[in-house]
Image (cartoon, rainbow, N blue to C red; front, side, top):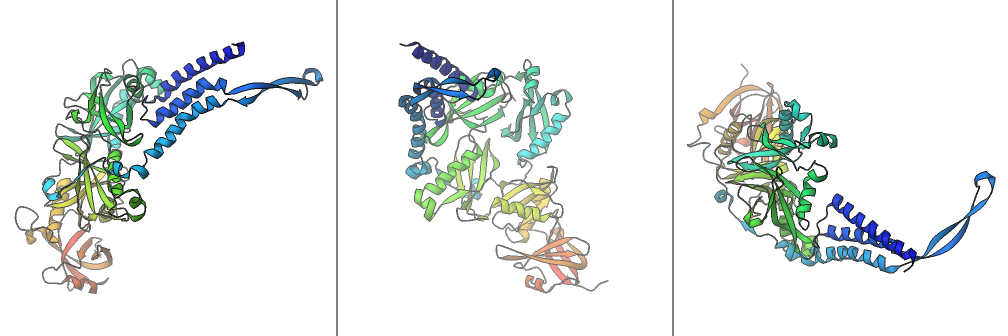
Length: 567
């Protein structure tokens, strides 16, 4: 063996070992052939060992140097490689080819039916399955943005904490002692804050009440050592990777608390349902104690009941889209689209019993602003149910709610779904420009022209029930028949503006009086003493008496409108 070969071997070993160790410490790939990342990492490792042997043979080239020291022309000898050895290139290419071929082999083109059968979806009856909601004080409507605003305000009052830590951007929706909560742990604010505080760790977490729009800081007796903002050995993902080198971690990692308030990270581990890389789904779950670094590995069916978030909402939607679009085969999903269904592009939360469920609308792949039904998916077990309720998709309902208070400029959050008198109903909050909750809104799924708002959930609910009764959707708004004298009031004034909107083929009239108050009437409903078709004859400048259903909504529903003489 020549000295040159010995040098190459030594260089190969040293550079290969160094690269392998350093890159693993930084990138943290799963050492699992079911992960494409593993094969990419393997290709890089092979290259780090093989690159000294890629070029073989040299030629001596004399090159003239333009001007040397002292003004003398000089020349230097340069050794250039003359041949590339194919074996190292082939070794590096093999893992890359495996990634390419693996993605092709496991694609939906060849495995449409396998993707579609990853989940089983049970069709159910909404009114039978979803318990009727009489009180709405236990419904979590706050989105992540509002939770961050309230949580940051709470943390801001604690000067000794806020100067060193920040709240994680990710709030986890949980069911804590039969009450919906959002929780997020504190994180180190930056590298230098970690250096200064690493010995004492992260002191606690923030728990937000999404019903009452309040938050509290919970200080732990034993601080968190392993968090996502930690560095080196304190980094959560590094600790998990060294404890579980072969597990494929989902990007979705939830921070949760058990029934005693103890903090845990819940890490979902994935495996492909289609060989070799396709249809990744949760197979196991790691429950990690960030205070002690201890953890336990569970199969999906063994996860403790207090855990709420095993499956992410994004994964729940993706799996249903496989089922909804690929059940008829790949080409049908591309060309024919027969019976193809997909979810809308966001999801909300429903708490049923002790579990958190995701819900999202389902549309035809060719539909734009209407749902043909909706699904709910258990965030812990992955169970699916489909409800064939035709109506407005979530964003149409949000726009309808915003339209009720358009003069205020409030923005609706993504809604939740409840059962009111057997009616599928969206319920949401309306927020101001600062992200604070100002009103609550309920919108009927099937008739999203029926909208009620209120400054409390209870008031919005009562107003909504009255509108359902008024529009003939239900027989009564409470325990007995609706008392029209109780719920109606009369106002007189001059019509300053009339606008019409067509919703699902029904013409709605918006009548504004000189007082600035706006009232609404549907042309399809008859009121006592008049027919709604007569609405078309009213015009600006008419002096009228309007009898309306008195609710907390900004726009009142007209029961009757009459010409009267000015007093």
